[in-house]
Length: 295
Image (cartoon, rainbow, N blue to C red; front, side, top):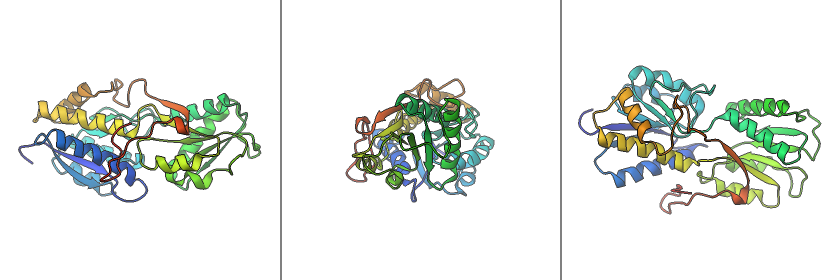
């Protein structure tokens, strides 16, 4: 590939994670409109064969991935090809299974601090016990294990007989949370992972009415994380269209609107908050596609 730098965008185009793809594609369209001619963007569906094709495609960089497992499997191919990988939605390093450094930059908060925040939130809400229900997905099951461990370490009862007044943690996609919620008026708080930048947030707000549902959400929403990553990459390639590999990674990090950690595993000081669902700021939507633009 010659001339204009070409970037691979790896995003889920269909299925349960398509909303994350919509968030990323909206920011790519924004970059195209604001900097025409700076970068060419090639969109790839996040499928098992995509990383190998991208790694062999001569791309300047890759941005995207919404699934931690897929990102973990893709990392060696990108690293071997010397292609910087920008992860707005997936954590790198810190035991996340996706290597930090070597061209990988992440803007996502980590699951260890999520689990700790859930346990601390339940205790702060006066619960002495905590129960976890999760969707039928390996990633949710793994996160449930982390939450159990942190709750036990915090002194919360996590046994099967936690009682109706204990806290309930629901681990599922926002548009699937409703099926796990207790009846309106039930005792005990409910804590749910939330990202207001994803369109499905609207379905969660509707399901939470009449219930003591608390959102456990990143300090920086998906829209801002995607925008920060795409903007930093666009600016780096605008200023140095020939940059590749480690030099391009360094240029992206230098232009990130949010300071990354020394290992580039996430945003320095970023983490999770616990808020009432109505208090979480929803992202605005683009009428033409429904993808959020900003909080």
